[in-house]
Image (cartoon, rainbow, N blue to C red; front, top):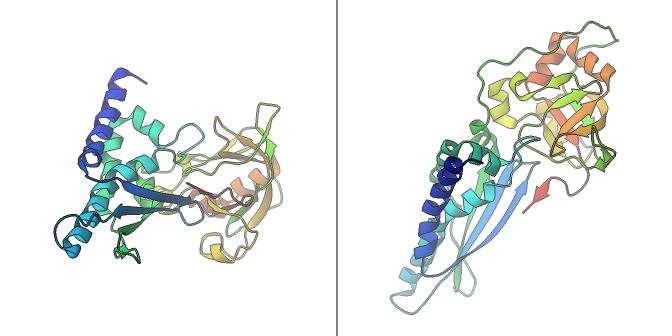
Amino acid sequence: MSVGMRRGVLAVMLGLCVVSAVSAQPVAVSRSFDWRTGMLELSLTADVVYDDGTPAAQMFLAEQRAREAFPNILFESLLSIQVDSRSNVGQMMAANPVLADEIVGLAQTARPGLPEPATDLKSITLNYSVPIFPDLARFFVTHNIPFQMSDVIEWVPTRPFTGLVIYAAQPLPLHGTDREVQLEPALLPEIFDTEMRPILEQDMLDPDFAIRWGSVAYAESADETPWMERIGTDPLRIMAREFFGVHPTDIVIGADDATRLLSLPENQRLLREGRILVIVSEGQTTGD
């Protein structure tokens, strides 16, 4: 990272920290992120200090401290979210400091639920739900026209499908190594075949669908019912063969499966629209 990039991101973070530094009392934070819903959940709890003023006024001041701390907490919470196999949000911002300013703006549009006082009235909690799609994803989808997919010369039996389901719950070889790894969820993962032919890269996605719901959806159950809007009633079901990337977010599928998808315009469309469900193991879709 260049000196200029470091200074850009540092300036944003220092600016965000000013509110926290001047707050009279710290704000406790509970956070979780669920790839199945694409929601970042943040709970901010501020103590109520009854040393001056009316109880109602002190409750209001505690609520304000939580609200003022939210931009900094949201910013920090987004840094570790994986964008693709190369970078997370923090690394992307380090490479493009302007992006940091744009992401800070998310805090201006997020609205908490109703304040929740503790039963003993000694603290108050604000709960925020921040949708990663489309709020965060829109910063990383930079193309307007999808790039052309690979030409198909060979022939395999195929037909139009409504979606694609990839089973990737087990550890698989990391391409180019002798290791086995678990798949890591990401905003915009990519798909290749065993010959490393690109099947779905970020710039092949329809940008409207990429912003709406990303490249793929993740589920920890083989029950496809919750995902019918995305994958339809007649998806192609296949197994992942390997994983790929500095962070193993990308999926490698069989060459014949890839050809079945690329050889028909209808199946290319389902790829472009991200009508893909990836089945992962229990516990892979959630984190703090």
